[in-house]
Length: 326
Image (cartoon, rainbow, N blue to C red; front, side, top):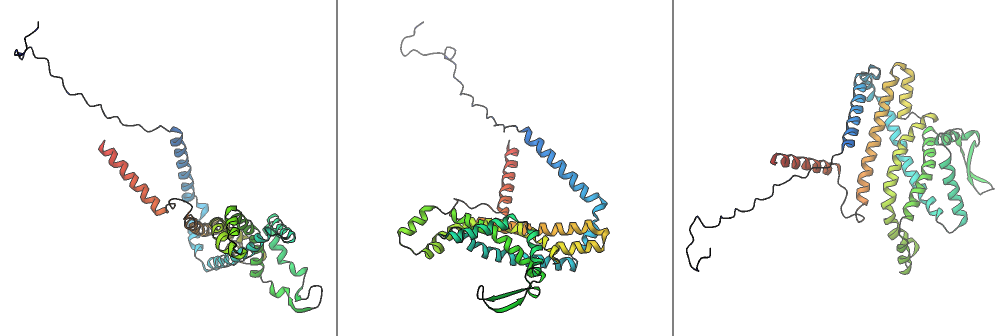
């Protein structure tokens, strides 16, 4: 029934007021289920727990004897010899690797062939063979001399007096290390973009200036981290100098094991732990060297272990607060 305009409407006849729309229920996004990851994590944790339990409870390891030998003067003296041999060989190997790498890129075919032959030879021959050959070098050449090639000698040396155990060890490791360092340096030089060489040549810069101020600084970004990684292998390779009668860390442990046959296992554990400490220290240096040379190549520097731990702790606290709020 129609009503005239302006007529009053009673409350009973008024249309019901519409209620405001109900807001949608907030739904939590469920993370993707990864059962394989949880199973693999559980398996790894069980294996780690079994290994730790075996190391702690197996009496064969003789941890009391391990603590006795760990800081004995004999072991520490061998450790110092290991550090000395590794340091001298690392420096000498790098100093020998740089000329070899430059010779590999030389315009002279003789230099290229000589550098390639050297690298091929010492990368092919096992290090223990090199050390033993040098140790018996006096059987081939009893004297060494300096003078005119194929002519008279001005100065003569007795090889048996010069070739001490330390000298043989350092020379053998350095010769072997130089071959690998040459490839590390050559790889770093090849990593520099060819446009850098062309731009330097277009500016008329001398070759020496191009190498020292343009090519080498960019190549170091690749050379230094890789060579620091090579040092880890060098530290472990020092254990072979025992075969040339030099009592390094492994040689001291081996000698004590022959004197005390009941302590062979704890002595080997002592050497293992010390090598782990040395290689871990080199690994830490390697990480920070790589982080240093990453400047200019990445937008943000890789986080340090402390920064990673802080970020993980902050994320864990944020998740806990989020769980508590829900």
